[in-house]
Length: 161
Image (spheres, one colour):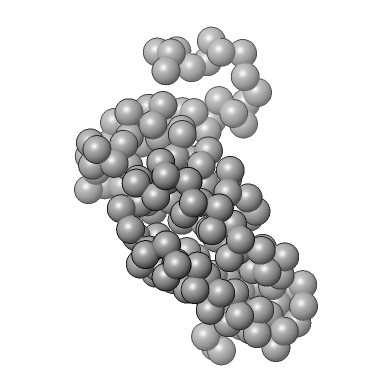
């Protein structure tokens, strides 16, 4: 990457993203955790994060790549999540980079706002079951973690989860 990212003439949001990856690339691998992609809607959302890491020298081979975790939260995202991860697992470069392990975050508040709590809980359950089937098909160990959701006013219910 250019030593002076600001000289690229990009919009402020894009520059800020590049600066974040540039700063992360200077940290020790132990300091890096997962990069959670909120509103993940396509396989390219995940691939873009991996490409940005590679651009800044953060690779699996060097042990400096952050785990890239899609967050599926809206009803549509939960419904489409199994197909999204199937696309990812079918890309040889992606499958090689994750080394047989994938984390997925399942959110609650947006799906509860979209469909109501009962329908959202069913969508989350169904999506996870379908994602497990996809992962088994590709020999990938899938780990879910859950965002408990915010307040009831935001569509979540922390006391329920």
